[in-house]
Amino acid sequence: MLRRRLTIVFMLAVGVSAAALAAGSYVVVRHNLLADSVNDGARQGRRNLVVAPTYLRQGSNALIQAYRRSGDFETVGVTGGKPFSSSFSVGLRQVPADLRRLVASGKLGYERETVAGTHYLVVGGPSSDGTELYFFFSEQNLRHELAQLRNVLLIGVGILMLLAGFVGAALARRTLRPVARASTAAHSLAEGLLETRLPVTGRDEFGAWAQAFNEMASALEAKISALSAAQARERRFTADVAHELRTPLTALVGEASLLSDHVDSMPTAARRPAELLIGDIARLRRLVEDLMEISRFDAGRESVQTETVDLASLAAGAIRARGWEGQVRLDADDVVLQSDPRRLERIVANLVGNALDHGGHGVAVRVGQDGVGAFVEVVDRGPGIAPEHLVHLFERFYKSDASRSGRGTGLGLAIALENARLLGGEIEVWSELGEGSRFTLRLPTPEAVTQTLRSGDGRVSAAEEHDLQDERRRSP
Image (cartoon, rainbow, N blue to C red; front, side, top):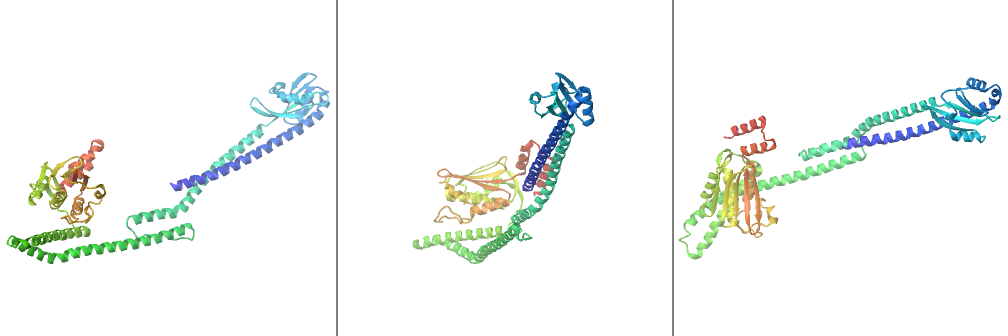
């Protein structure tokens, strides 16, 4: 999510900056405090070395007592080869060897040492009478202050990161608000709300974006409106043409019927033109009927009259009514479902007629039921359909023959598919050149739906079973 990423980036930026600033501050403060501790220790050590010969004449105890009055430090020394110390916790063994070698060479030096968990600054130097003196200045308070400073800085960095998180979330929400509005507007456009527009709230990049989006939405609305109007005009034109053709076509059909009754008595030269005329009128009649049906689909005026249908008997009746018994082999199982028999017969007739027109003889129809639902399968042994034509088979007026010389209208498969979808089904097609074609009408049944639901976990929930029973009861 972009808002979350922006918040995290803002937090990291503030956190890294604050951590760098805190680390730098800690290093500077630590360096200054340690340097001040060394300067103070060295200054105190020089003073101690100056006054040491005066008190050493009275003995090491007198020197230690004098040092206790002058400052808070522990003293370790070596005089006349004999060590002495002002504390039981520190002694000559706690003095670093490097520092002892430096003092033995007659120089003043210092080194830090930890004794029993206590941090000391050890300052050492030679006295004027050859005595070596070492002063242990405790740095526990300094270390404690540095630890407190470190903790305060870490807590401060944590607080700054939390504040940065809240501020970053607020800024990201405010910054991405136009993006969210644009996303919502895009979804609205996708759902068909073409009047959706974005508010133009400024002259920045988001304002320009909103303006461009509104211009795009206006252009899209105008284009879709124009396409819808053109489609509506096309549908009205198709419906009007089909309607206007019905009256003269009815007269032509009647005249062709009269003419067919006298074809046999006509002279041989006139018989063939009369037969062609009768065939063309019959084809024109089928075309007008198909156009009328397509126009009803486009207008949404088609309805489904559901009743109990024996699919095997329906397929057999459709084949018998059209005189295809000798050309079509039927293999049917007992399949009963709730559907519209008139539309089912139309689909079966269109599929079988298409197979006979393009596949010739050897057409087989199989009716059955599987886990998907009921099906009607129409197989032919014709030349097959090229792959580039398969994707266009169900388009209106599409014919794989470029010359369009076939007997069909180019609407049969499109009408069959529209009827199948109206019944909640689908038509599948398979074809291979030289092998033939297979068209399969698939229709849902309550039993197949139940089997599909059970395939998930082996059970059907009570709610799902109740819905299925309601569906069966609603079906006549």
